[in-house]
Image 1 (cartoon, rainbow, N blue to C red):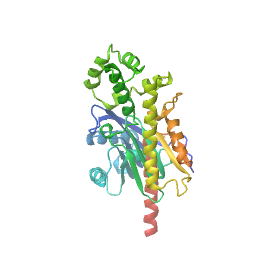
Image 2: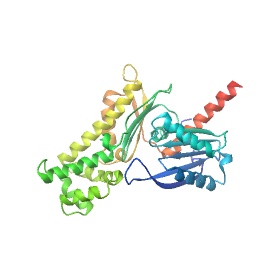
Image 3: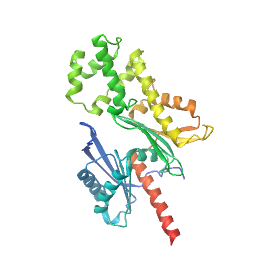
Image 4: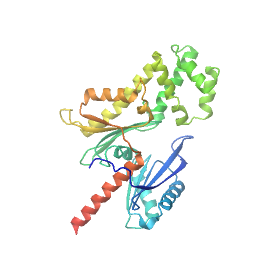
Length: 326
């Protein structure tokens, strides 16, 4: 069945804050779920101590312990290579008994699974503070685009949009760029009196999430007709759509005639604007012109549940394979 059970069989949740060593000053959340007593699933980046703490907390809340766990799925930001996976698997193996099945994936994979009932097929586009497109074919091939962080060009991300807006304000102030409504709106939002103060504000705490929080300001200026803000959002739409197209093309998800159906899971605050200037809708319109078979999905559950569904599918597959070998 493609329907999620209602209510979800979640026995416990635990959440803890931690620092992402790949980003300056960003505080992320670790989200652990215990499902049906026997499974433990965790999403987001975390230091080892925080992960151990949140796992123990979730198990304790469920009235269970490590010996009852049958599978662990860790969906971790920054897992981009088999050596990354192996390092985390080795650590997990020190914690859990040998019979426990362990799965480690990039957190984008859990986001995909949150929209596909745990099936790894199709493409996910995440656009929040950062952005990434990640896809799978039904025979297990995978590809990704973007996701390299703001320095290396995640231009369609919340950070990318807001950074371009801040740049536009400084350019206008210097006389190097056109006048823009972004100047007065951003200064008012931040409680600053001049564009000169904006430089100090930006570098006082160069947190990616702090910059990305200005996206709604950019959207409101675009809706009010500001040409500079509109141009920034249009470029972001193109960048996000190009990320998806790159993945779809490399994997052939669209088929030879470019019309095959495939799920496109869309996740993240930038895509959930729900305003007149709807970035998610614009991205989908852009993609549909080339790939009419793209089927947009907005997940109704968080990526932690996606990780749960993914691990459950993988666990059941392994059980079937082991039974067959016997």
